[in-house]
Length: 316
Image (cartoon, rainbow, N blue to C red; front, top):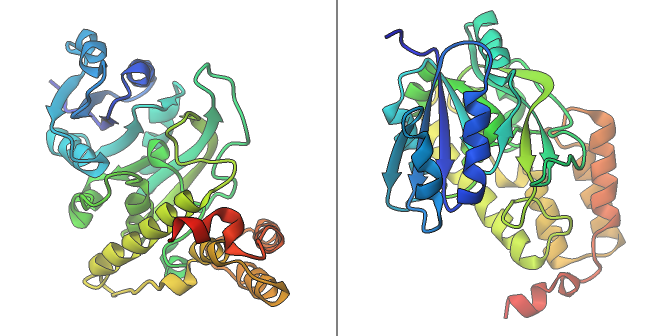
C-alpha cells in the first residue's frame, strides 16, 4: 500500500466521552491519505469500549499511564507519515485541516512547524470566545523567541503539525511533560526551521472542567503554571545548549511568569508601573496594541496583597 503522507496522532486519557468525536473528525478529512493512531494512556473510564468500534479503521495502542508526552511519543514511534499532526482526545478538527496543513508544508521545504487557530467551543459544539491564538506568527521566530524565554502566542497541541525530519532532530518529547506537551512542541520547533501560520480556525478546542483555560486563576493554578513554565525553560535550555548556534532562555524574560509571580505577591503603584513597562517591552507578543493591552490589564488587575488570591493561606 502507498505510504500515508500524514500521521494523525491522538492521545487519550480518560476522555472516553469525547474520543469518538476526535476520531470521527480525523476520519472525515479531505485531502491526502492519512493514518490515524490512537494511544490510550492507561485510561480507567469507558475509553476501551468507545475505541473498540474503530479498531478496523485506526491503529489502537494501549499503555500504562505515563502522561501525554509518553503517549505522543508512542504514537510517533508507531507512525510512518512525513507530517505529524497532533490531536488531543477532547478536541476535534474541521474537514479541511489536513489538506491545508499539507499544502503549507509543501510550499516551503524549510518549514518545521505548521499551525492554525482553534475555535474554543463547549461540548455541545457551541462556540465561545474568539479563535486562539489571536496573533499569528510566521517565518524564522528563533531570534525573538530567544528574547522571550520561548514564549509567543503559540498554538495548542491540536493545532500543531511538525515535519518528521524536524522530529528526528528534536527527539521525543521529554516525558516530564505529562500535560501540556504543546509547550515543548511550540518552544523547540521554531529553533529547527521556519513556522507557517494558517489564519483559519481549522479545529475546535473543547472547554470543559479539565482544561488549562480558567476565566480567573486562583493561587493553585498560578503555582501550577509557574512550575510548568520554569520546568519547560529548564528542559528547553538543555536541548538548546547543543543547538547550532546554542541558545539560552531566561525565566526573567518570560512575561507571563513574571505576571503570575506579581499576582502571587501583590504590589502597589510602583510594582504595577514596573509590570506594565515590562509587558510593553515583552518580545513574546509581536502585536503592539495587544501587547500594550495585556500589559495595562496585568498592571490594573494586580492585587495589592497576594493574600487576595489565597497565596498567603495556601503557602502556609
